[in-house]
Length: 202
Image (cartoon, rainbow, N blue to C red; front, side, top):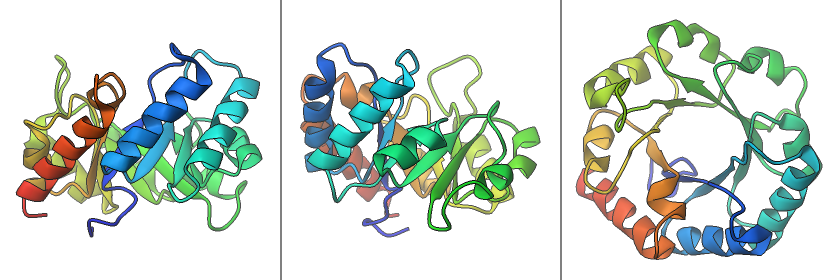
């Protein structure tokens, strides 16, 4: 993937601890630092709030693709570009029949058993790659990415220190939550991740 791919650096939102305006401001900073897509993930918020936040992000960052976790209805209501489906959600193939033709669908892959259900998706998010007892590691990530035969982003514990390893293993991009949105300087954090990706030569 080129550096301009929307999957290069996906910034996944964390919470509304500083309100909608605060979250949007942090999103703007990570985009300024090099994030290429925003993934709206707010597990504890109502659908109405999700639509409000998604619309606020679209207004503030009209040139940055936005996908919404789990809720295609929220994504379409807010004018987002797509949805990101978890392992327990409907399959991408089933979702494809209910959304517009140009709607982007991403899907989680955590094990070999998940590879088959990725059919119909535009890209996969494989993880957790680092940071937990169940972490796949870069080598296993690369194996699953090749099995899926779709653009793959690395999710879970990805930092500036390990980003190059997953890029070398075949990642089209990386996704981060706390490394970006929990940083005291989200723009600088995004720049560090992009620099690490660039250092991989991919």
